[in-house]
Image 1 (cartoon, rainbow, N blue to C red):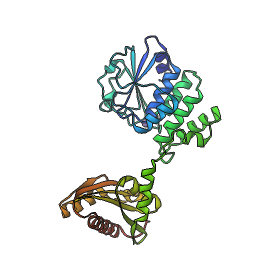
Image 2: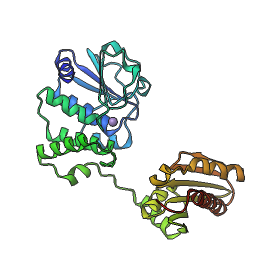
Image 3: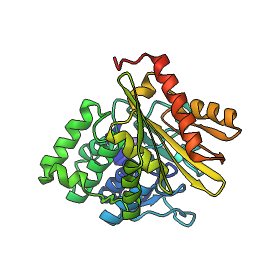
Length: 319
Ligand SMILES: [Mn+2]
């Protein structure tokens, strides 16, 4: 299948690569590797690039375009996109090659070629195999991009399948790329005002111990979600960070992933706090928020009470 895709991409007329909306580094790295290896490849991003992809594109000077209406190419190659609804563009599937690592999706069955390998942690690994099948050499820049795609799609190897580590180590060895270079490819420096908010959040921290668990609250004036994450990194299991603006308050909440796996749902929890206090709360299991009118300290305390009750019901032991 991969050698058939390689021979299609080598034919005349060029290829328009399309990526899912808010394209992530795995998608962009995959497209860049194809662009560097096959003739006349344009990268189209109908739904734009996400924050990290913008940094990756700046770091490696990867050219892509949101608007490709004027681009005339013989074939379309869709990468890293789990379904047509993720594409933000209408395409003629009968002329499209789809390469993906998500679960097989019947909606792609109309494609000219559909290569899906959900045994892979990233699309970058599949594209690396494609380049090998086509006997293309992998430049240092392409290697770095694919490594970054693998890193970000596996949560820095936390969710990596064995193949991701093998592909990554092959790329390291190929160009003598060290781990710190691959990991530091994108400078995600946190702005000083955000770091000061995190430090102030730690300064104003209150916490409660419930068995083996810790619930923390804090107050600030900005970056509530980022302060929450830093409190979780400091050791809290659940963190609530709020700010007051006149009569209005805003609170962000985060829970450690292990607690989410045990059934804690902060979105529901803050939904309950909201209906008790006639404010609007909700969100995901591990990340939620509540906004409204009232005293932020009072709402933080009520939220912490709810969290402590949830933890007691869970049983106080981590195991
Ligand atoms: Mn991916």
